[in-house]
Amino acid sequence: MAKLTEIGWEAFSGLALEAKKPYLEREEGDGMPYHTLFAQQFDRALLERLCALANRIRFINKSKEGALYLKNVLAHKRAMLYFSQPSSRTFLSHLAACQILGLTTGSVRDAATSSEFKGESHEDSVRTFSSYFDMIIMRSPEQGLAEKMAWELSNSERPIPILNAGSGKDQHPTQALLDIYTLVRSFETKGGLDGRTVVFCGDLMRGRTVRSLSYLLTNFKGVKQIFVAPQELQVPADVVMVLAKKGVEFEVADDLKSAVKIADAVYMTRIQDEWDESKGASAKIDTSRFKFGAEELALLGKDGIIMHPLPRRDEIATCCDHDPRAMYWRQMRNGMWIRAALIASVFGFEKSIMDCGY
Image (cartoon, rainbow, N blue to C red):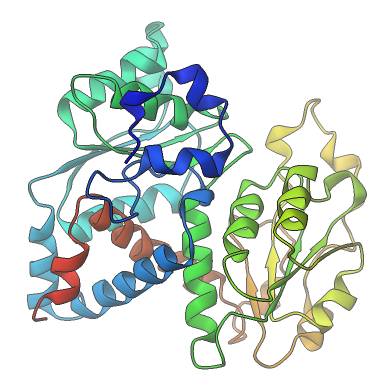
């Protein structure tokens, strides 16, 4: 199996994402990632394994005895949560996932509280963390940083796994995992995820969750993707190219109501104005037709679901919150379970958890 120690950074960074996958897998050769950096690392078999493990962890954790068993699974490991970009759900769900499995955790949530404030490089910061911890879960506004740090650590004296909890505008693989997990659970008693229609709406140009989930959906048969957004915020060309290459049916549209009528799942996103090149640029875009409220709720099928990576602003009206089709709160909780499954798998405990007597 290819390893990151066998390829230089320039050569590795120049590879297509799918070509990078073998360099990021565990040495055991079971296909599970060692470093989790982008959605392209997960095929359907891996997704099904992780969803099954997340379900198993949920079940075991329901009893006190089971919860205590899980807390001993990784009690000998430590994880650093290195979040230099603001976060609530992503940080807390990773923290909760670590706690379920018994990992001791440390955290840096602001570069101003670390030696980076004094001019320390990212490379030196990460090497420092690797001296004290066995995994680094990192979130950064800098595109590609997690990938570069994974290569650096793999070529150091103390290689440890990196889990990308969001990097710039490009990828958010663990959010995509929880989104897939939510979709699979939502339709598991209704014929499954194959053949469904998923509508993405909002800021699709800068939404890294959209890019990652769109790719993961290509692992399922006959899933149609509809992208609804103002022209300025429509899905970027790289996503469209992937879908076209894979022969996935998709549509670019600007009418949310029409899309909702045929949707099995509606994935709403907020306007990500933190990426504005000039302050206030996003406010000039008319987004009034790209919000989900009572009218859209009435058009959604009885088995349809509404999703959102959160946080939200006004793109989903609060009147939708108590409808059983609103999955965004459950979606958020699902993140804790699927991230626990991923962390356990990275450290090689998938089989022991699946086979335990609880």
